[in-house]
Length: 229
Image (tube, rainbow, N blue to C red; front, side, top):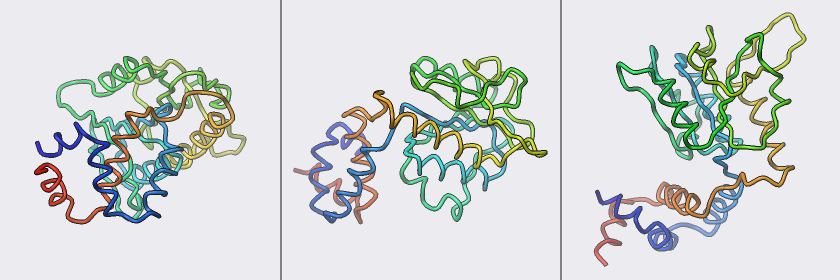
């Protein structure tokens, strides 16, 4: 309840907290915000190996992806602290883990309502090379399980099915390697085009607040002091 009151006034509380962090940390936050995006987002469907899930999280954060959508079916989503290397602190998680429903459908329906084109990664015979996809609209990139790939539901709901072209005998890549190749390419495309991939001012305010709070010791005490004024 206290934190909701804080989020009602993000700019004011951030300004209050910035007296308690260094100029270097303030500059670092601003530099990361400038490259953060919700134009691209990542969806992980039923990943059952924590080291793979953690590596994709770390890769996504490194490329400035703000949101990670987690679909749970048979396998709970777990993080490996050593591999994620603290990256979970800087992204927003959206979990779809309700029992008795198709969480893939719930997630992808919501993303489509939010204006995202759904790009599903698969070795499906109808898949296009991922680098042939124009980045002319917001896109959600869906990665499936390590062994069986994405679900039939994800394939049915895909706006585009994409794959990474390979020429070796081995026809699959590690999950985090696949994510890294695709995200690096799409981020480079965004950086070279005049597209509205940056965060909105409202999003920046809220994320700036969250990141600033993570850098201040005894944050609950500061919240009480701020609200008492």
